[in-house]
Amino acid sequence: MNNSKLTVVMYHYVRDLKNSRYPNIKGLQIELFREQVQFLKKHYNFVTVEQVLDAYHNDKAKDLPDHPVLLTFDDAYKDHFDYVFPYLEHEKIKGAFYAPVKAVTENTVLDVNKIHFILASTPDEKLPQLVNELKLQLDNYRKDWNLQSFDYYFDKLAVANRFDPKEVIFVKRLLQVELDERLRKIITDDIFQKVVGMDEGMFSCELYMSMDQIKCMVDNGMHFGSHGYDHYWLNSLSKEKQEFEIKKSIEFIKEVGGDVNNWTICYPYSAHDDKTIEVLKENGCKLGMTTIVDTADLSNKEGDVIFKLPRLDTNDLPKDANAPVNKWY
Ligand SMILES: [Zn+2]
Image: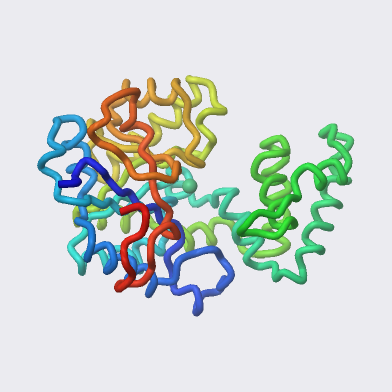
């Protein structure tokens, strides 16, 4: 038996990319999602969050099926209601979904999503223009915000990786991490308006599930956990601010009909610290998902492993029903 080794798979956008308004968004085409589910069905056994909690907290790992796998979906995209939910229903699989509370309840759009759609609306040949727009923005705010020169930021941040050219990395890192949070927001909002050109409230309604859709999924056995309130890097917040994020999450879970004594969290950007885990334990949270790329060992009870569960990205596993298993099996 190999049932204490748990595979958790992480998904973000799952959509009909080819026929969508933003075919360049970095997402998973629905047919490939279905292929991957069929691949997993052949070699693994789907489990629920509740089974995982039971296995870990009540020492019932032996009750788990061989090669257990749990599917998780971040950011509460409407994609998950439109394409994922019906297919999971069809296959009798219960997934775990993680909602950024404010985006869903107050019709805002996460800055990280604004950046995705700014980039998805900018073809490669227009990337220099986008970088130039950022240069103008930096010039505009340099005095009031005590900014460095454009070259300083570009040299520091514009480093290509295996997924993206250097201009894309520059935009992401400048607007996601480098600048002061308030200025990041001002510039991101301005460029979102210029490039995507849609009202934020309307865009939010199009991008995320509604509360009714979430309740419908909970009624049908899907698990909804917290993805924070404001999608912050939790480890950058004081304990009080982390408590606020957590309390808001519990209100949300209560409202959609979840179990507030056995709830779970997926840390935005995987970021958490010892304070986070303290607050979570004080508030009935039983499990935390990260983006560490690995499989989980449920028999290891040392050092809060259940609050640091690793996950594989969908791209780490085959998207072909007939593919052989890979090194993660
Ligand atoms: Zn997220």
